[in-house]
Length: 195
Image (cartoon, rainbow, N blue to C red):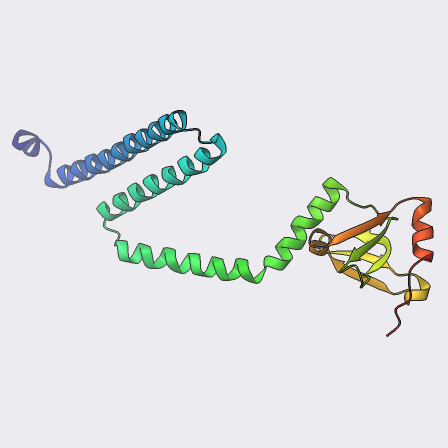
């Protein structure tokens, strides 16, 4: 080691030593991740564990090991773990608040995608959201479906208003649907609410 130190200037030796430590940390993390994956694989063969359970566990452990290795590497490069933890926890807190604040919008967007792909109803169908058996819900002809709302036109007897129903409601409540000629009959049979 002294011969190597004599051949290389001090700054190069420190950089070489730091690089060697980083490579060693990454190699240990890689070997540890492979050992955990093999251990989970043998555990899955020994016990009747479903493959669908082992895949996310293996992925989570891989991210945990590699994330820890990244923190060790950053610590060797002089970044404080406290600063990293503070920044990460602050970012996660802001992301959680933002996700919670826009959850209803994201839910409606996802439900719109499901309405377009699965097709529980189409434009022109008559749909009714059923609240309970004794209380009829919103009923009308579907005239528009967008990313947040489905617009229904009520019958003239019920007021003939346009009602915008959030798309998520169609997946949270029971829905009655009429298509084609039976849709016109269903609209004429709409009971008028007596309050």
